[in-house]
Image (cartoon, rainbow, N blue to C red):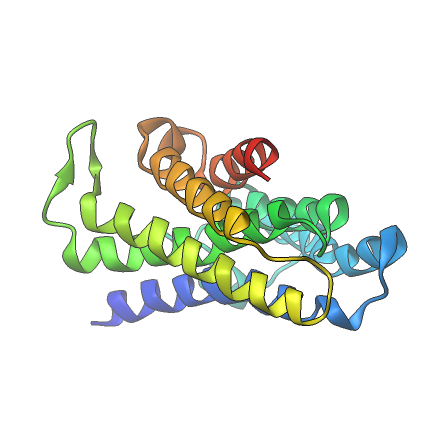
Length: 208
């Protein structure tokens, strides 16, 4: 029971951090200056991951909440890639780009729920990757897509982005592609915190 709660807590952090950060984007000014200022927030966490992961700064609470096995060196992999990708999406794409929405929503909501649902209902495995489940991949695509639609509506209400059915279709294609990438064995070998947002950026650049 304790192990399950620990895993759920770590996934809650994974899902919530990037999405809550995006909710705060309207607090910043428009244009490149606002994007760079907002990006300093996850940017500080890049430094934090490097310091804690390398052992220069002791922070057991961070290690416990963001690592699978309690090893500080894990922070130099998945958690570091996570904040790097969010920082890049913010600084480069910003709130007027559907690519930023898709990348962060599929990284946070999609990948987070893929693990949660996959662990609970993942009896049916994907043929090309026995470590991934059909239920987890469906949850990945669905959660990423629904979160993307939510933020499309949110940013549209501020006038940052103009929604359309074509954009909705684009989000669906990006979420489908991210679920495929996350389920591929290569994502486990590299890190899905890296492969998923990069796939979203690539596909997003083609469909938006």
